View 1 (cartoon, helix red, strand yellow):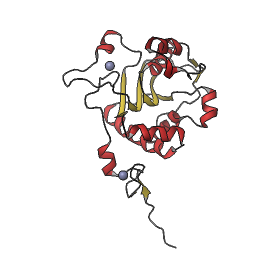
View 2 (view 1 turned 60 degrees about the horizontal axis):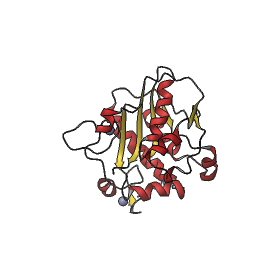
View 3 (view 1 turned 45 degrees about the vertical axis):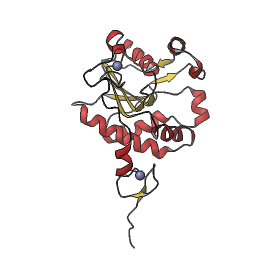
Length: 225
Ligand SMILES: [Zn+2]
Ligand SMILES: [Zn+2]
């Protein structure tokens, strides 16, 4: 019996690739990164700055954001395909890339990973939580416990897109509920896209209020406008 070498195909160009990931080296090299991210929220900054004005004046509850890419095409399509066409292979590839990124910056990894939970209604609709699918390969690669039941989302955020900035913040208040103790833990929250940062900040506040030592945000892409 012959064992045939399995070729994977690239999630962007569709061509076969011999890499371990379903993304060819050429397409990977062209994906847009954030050149000078704020060390706290990952917003793009002028080359000379380390933190953005918002993080300096109103520090969020999280300490750092690690975003692999800028949320511009083709990331927008790849993430929409993941969420709405169930392209779970994208979550696998992105999770591995996120793991590779954070592997280089942490002398000690966080104690646990928490994927940003979806509201039960949304989860039923979609059938899966994309943040959890992204967190799975990270947990496996970095050997960090993945805690998917530690908190739940108790407020639906259906109307979020139609709200202005202040209303969005208010709408998220009390959005999450914590079920287990996390006292003294260093936690990484995993999400697909960080848009305003309000959602991850709300979850971070809850975790910090309940004794988390440090909360960081790990995401695939961040909105850069
Ligand atoms: Zn390709
Ligand atoms: Zn910032």
